[in-house]
Length: 83
Image (cartoon, rainbow, N blue to C red; front, top):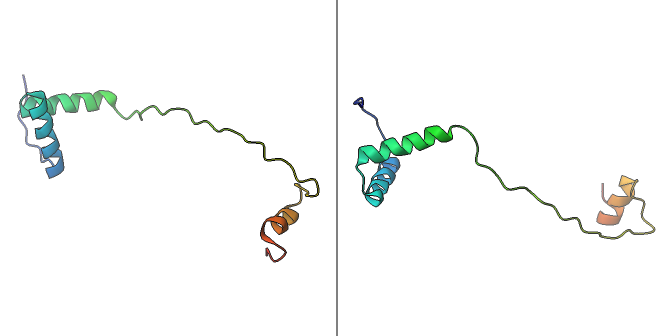
């Protein structure tokens, strides 16, 4: 048994529900109820994301460059006037 209520839908939502109703061959009411049910079942759980993978690439070392000295690295990358 259903309860009758008034809901104000945005134009884009109304159009999407009508389109879905036509494609399913069901009434507007049935389609809207089913869409609401499926949205409520999903709840607030975010969709599962695939894992992020990063592939490291060996870029080699410069023998005359100190990787512990930030000033030297900036000078090498940007020139003597890096400040």
